[in-house]
Image: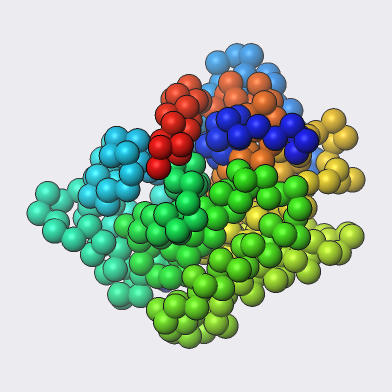
Amino acid sequence: GPASFDPDSAVHCGFGAGRLALAENLKGAEEVPMDRVLQHLNGLEDESRGDGILQYSDDTAMTRCVVQSLLARAGFDERDMAGRFAVEYSQSPGRGYGAGVIQVLRKLASPNLNDVFQPAQAQFSGRGSFGNGGAMRAAPFALAFSKIADIKRYSRLGAMLTHSCSLGYNGAVLQALAVHLSLQGALEQPDEFVRKLLLEMEEVEGEDVARSDARVLNQPEFPFCKRLHKVKDLMERNNVSIEEVISELGNGIAALHSVPTAIFCVLHCLEPREALPEHYGGLERTMAYSLALGGDTDTIACMAGAIAGAHYGIDAIPQAWQRCCEGAEVADINAERLHTLYHQA
Ligand code: 8NA
Ligand code: MG
Ligand code: MG
């Protein structure tokens, strides 16, 4: 819990929780009854005693590429990272990638490509993607870099390899900042946490490109800041229904309709909640709550899990959940190595 905040296990967990491939079976629905979520999570107990392994989806596949690239290059290298995305996709194309991004991943495999940012810029008639595919893999930037300026710069560039619209890559910046602040223990003071995110995002969204992208897409200016204000309003209310969260913040595949939602899930679940089992800790509450929102569950739970993981630490993840995750051992080894890089960078 917050009182026993331990940066080492937090680094582990920031990556560890994000890899939980719990959500695949629950995807697609608008709001999933909490009973079904809890039944599914209880089932992992049996699953992990047998040899049931839950396969991870595109979120974890791409997150692993980001981690491997940051480690191999001891920092950000766009060509190396793009190459890893392309190889990963060609080896396992069936992980559930977004319908548009697969064109980018195919083009990134070409040996004749000079500018690795170009395929992303050609998406959606040149507007670029605003999907949450950049944000879903952004956590490792906060685990590899300790300075806010580096986190902002590289999470943005890392996302721009597939998402060139600011409503896509700024979602990645927001997600990486949330993991960073969580690692610093900022969730001890939830209001301050949101205030700090707003301060950073006001600067990020104040850029001319962000303003013109918002206009072109008929969004208000400072779209992520607007949503963070909604997060604050919902936090201040005692009983918020899941339908209200979905209608105010969204549960969809756009970064704008999922990153603030994931942040809200973490904040809402800092305290025990009536709808959730009493014996659940904060990390378990966060995962169950994100799954109950339905929609793009794997990605919202992945992002909420990474933020919550950075706060609660690896020991907060039930053994049974860890045992049935594909790739858990590699994640532990890489978390250790990221921790070393974090202290060097
Ligand atoms: P993406 O870049 O293909 O974007 C996802 C989708 O968003 C596109 O296919 C479009 O429909 C739409 N979109 C994005 N930008 C624009 C634009 N400028 N104009 C019009 N439409 C646009 O994929 P991604 O890498 O961002 O992935 C997003 C999500 O899709 C992830 O959650 C990923 O897991 C995947 N996915 C989601 C579901 C689901 O929630 N049901 C299922 C399978 C895959
Ligand atoms: Mg996925
Ligand atoms: Mg998804």
